[in-house]
Image (cartoon, rainbow, N blue to C red; front, side):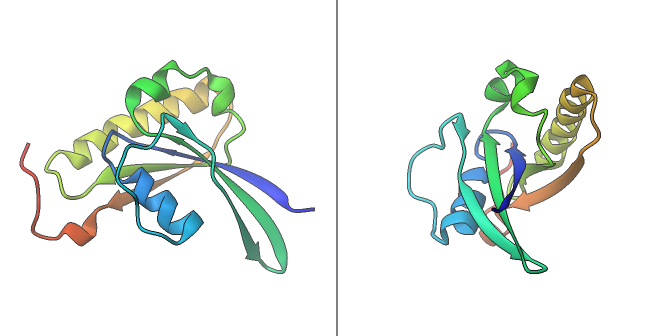
Amino acid sequence: MNQRLLIAVVGPRSSGIKSLIRRYCYDESPKPGRLSCLDFPIKTHKFDDKNFDLAFMTASYSECFHHLPSIYWKNSSLFIICYDLSTTDGDKQCSQWILNVKTQVEHCGRCVDIVIAGTKVDLGDQRVEE
């Protein structure tokens, strides 16, 4: 039986969560349309001759993240915070998300790793001024 790891993927609206998940879990480009507030794709990954089911729980915007009870986040092994590198305020948004995640994790009484994922680097010079 595979060991299951829950990975929470969060970030501001239009931060590239959908593209990241579709590319990793399904090896496909994102399709037009929005990611639902919550999504739970699973991908099996082999590491050191062991199989792990990586269960991704996504919250694609802050309203969704803040209104979910901590029970959704308390069993997460890892948080991935996505932010859009093509916008000028991506780093500011990322800082706010780090605080949000730390607050949720502390509320659960746990320590969890946080990974920052800058997205949309492929957009190059198409930077959006905000």
